[in-house]
Length: 73
Image 1 (cartoon, rainbow, N blue to C red):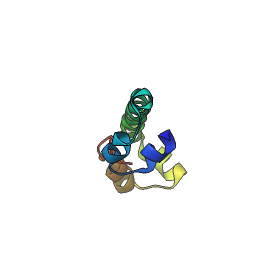
Image 2: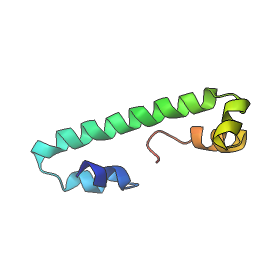
Image 3: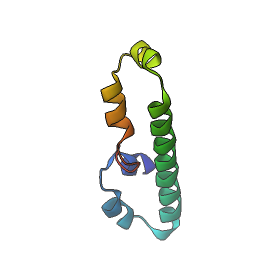
Image 4: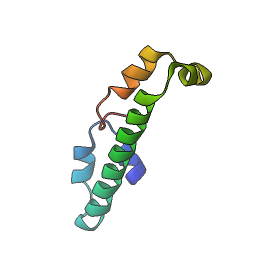
């Protein structure tokens, strides 16, 4: 079920359908995902141009991805 919630752009309707026993674990999973995205985007922002070239993305592409809010995939 947690994978389903991660793939939805608007997780609130999906959370409403969960039983109370699973709601807590679904929320915890969603928060962990958000924290990981936030950390990854901060790290992406800090990469230098040489590393970005090595992985095949431009500074503009990195900035576009890093500037997304943590709740957006």
